[in-house]
Length: 83
Image (tube, rainbow, N blue to C red; front, side, top):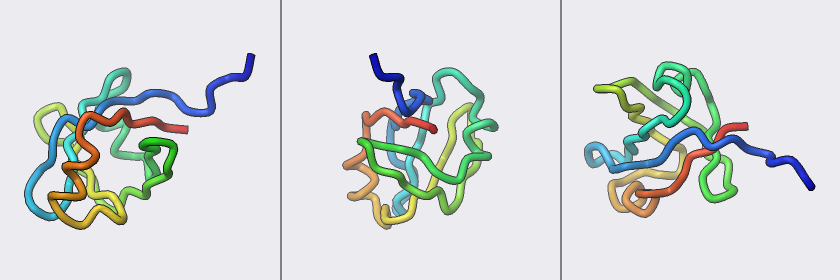
């Protein structure tokens, strides 16, 4: 049996604003831990985090290539993985 390459870290619960930020609910670690990471994996694709901040127990993240609210909405309810 092959080991999993990624660890589930949370879920994208919503968008935030109109610039394409996503709101991530962390599962195992604190949002402060996730804030330190520079790359998140969503749907098997590596997405670089260009900006992030903690807000009310969630992580708000701006991901490269996600430039508007419509692109962010497409990621809603997706699981976020870390390597």
